[in-house]
Amino acid sequence: MIYARSLSLWVVLLLAIGVGLVYLIPHAVPLWWGDYYNPLEPTIYGADEALYTAGVREVLEGNFLPSDLAVVEHKGASFFYPPLPFMVMALFTVLVGGVFSAWIVADVVFSGLAFFLFYVVARRLLKNDPLAVVCSLVFVFFYRLFIPVSISSVSSVVDHIVHNLFY
Image (cartoon, rainbow, N blue to C red; front, side):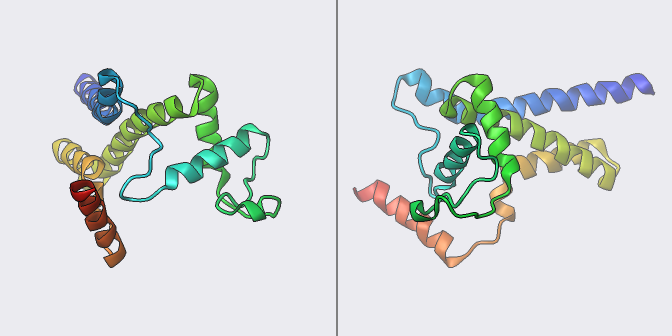
C-alpha cells in the first residue's frame, strides 16, 4: 500500500514538473527564435508585472515595505502593499541574476507548485486521485474560466484583438 501511494506521489510530482515546463514554452520559444522578448511586457490582462518589478527594485534597495509604486509623487509616503510577493521575487532575482530571468523561473516554479497544491486540496475534498489530477490540471491551465468577466475586461480583449489586426 505504501509503495502504491508513493508511486502516485511521484506521478503527481512529474505532472507538476510537466506543468512547469508547459508554462516555460511561451517564454522559451521567442528566446530560441532570437526575437526580442520581454516577459514583463503588458498583456491584455494588465500591466501588473511592471508594478511588481518596481516593488522588487525597492526590496533590493533595502526598503522591505514598498511605498506607492504607481505614483512617483508619493514615493516617500507610506503605502502598504503586501511585501511577501516582492520579497520572493527579489530572492529569485538575486538567485538567477536578473529580473527577466527571475520572472521566467518564477512562472515555471509557481505554476508547478500551484498544480501540486491544487492536487492536494482536491484529493482531500474528492478522495479520488485521478479526479483530483484532472481538477488540478483544469484549474492550472484554464484558471481564467473561473474569474468573473466584466465589461471592461471584455472591452480590453476586443481592443487588443482590433489593435493587432488593424495596426
